[in-house]
Length: 114
Image 1 (tube, helix red, strand yellow):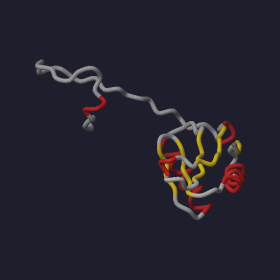
Image 2: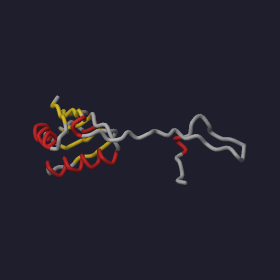
Image 3: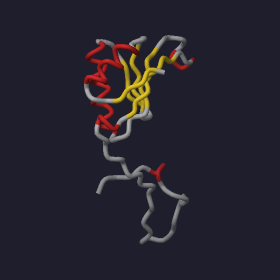
C-alpha cells in the first residue's frame, strides 16, 4: 500500500486509538472523452503571474492527467516552444492560438478560439 499524504486526511489530526485508520479524500479521475466530444477553449493570457508575457492557454479538457500531459507535449512539439500542464490547463509560451486550433482540429478535437 502506498503512503498517503497527511494533507489529504479528512477532519482528523491525531488519534490515540491504535487500530484507527485514517480516511483519505479520494478523488476519482475521470476517464478521457473521445477527441470528438472534447470542447477545448484556446485563448491568449497575459496575467501577472507570467510577468506580462504572452501565453496561450488551452482549457476544457475532460480526462486523465496523463492524457492531458500527452496532449500538452504534442502541442509543445508541433509549435516548437516551451510550456507546461498545470491545474487541468495547458500553457504554451507565446501567441500560437491559430496554429493550436489547427493542430487540435487535425487531431479531431473541437477547439474554439476565444
